[in-house]
Image 1 (cartoon, rainbow, N blue to C red):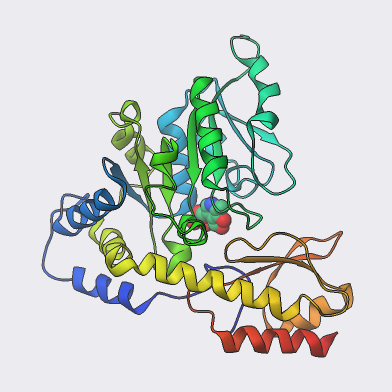
Image 2 (cartoon, rainbow, N blue to C red):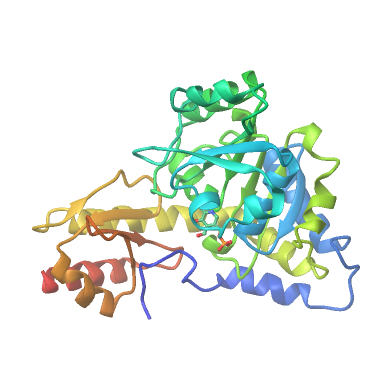
Length: 338
Ligand SMILES: Cc1ncc(COP(=O)(O)O)c(C=O)c1O
């Protein structure tokens, strides 16, 4: 099957697969005290500086672990109306932490201080849950990317108002590839306190990493990680994949390629009749409105998800293994059904 449905429809990059195989040798100490985890931690430190790293099975687990580290049950997390933590995690953060989520309307998936300011009235009012975290996704669920300036402004605003910044980095590699800066410049240097670093959507078989930069969040984190059921006894198999991902910039090579394929796809279809690229193509997602009658025949050939059933906006995702040929064939298939 060729697909533009999601970057987690793809398989495992061969360099990642080899790394899993290399880790499958002899016995190792369990629960992350093994040489492979130490190696991956060192590579994360090389990229980000002083960082505490915890590995998780999936992105939902990483987000829940992050939010658990920075909220109490009466506190609240401010997020976009499209945030994965709100829309796609079956209530996991609220169920497992007790915190509430305060969604904000946004056109492009991004948050700004101006949008958040009205919620500051809640602070100190015993009848309201207390905003403690601003959670953002980079890249966003709408395929857009915060600029460094936008990120810094938001982080400064959060800190000035006693809040943390949580970054859902399921697609941080795509965002950083688009920004053309280092991982550190795009995260901790902007003031991000805690984040997830995506693996599954960028060539891993399984795994994400929680990266903690704020010293005050580090001491309790291992306990929350375990309570959240995300501590893998055979952690070496997750960690070894991250070692491969962070070696020779594999993360960047894959993400750059996926982004390039999304741009190519947008270019190939943008002038077709009835086709409208509906959002800025900043990373590896193309949001596009197509005529209703072509959706089913096209989807029968290449699976993809409808984002908005009313407007017939579709979401097309490109992966590390999407080829130019596949993009052109897909565009050709669209032309035919049109
Ligand atoms: C923005 C974002 N965050 C987190 C996730 C992680 O989800 P999962 O728990 O399925 O790995 C996803 C996956 O779709 C996502 O798009």
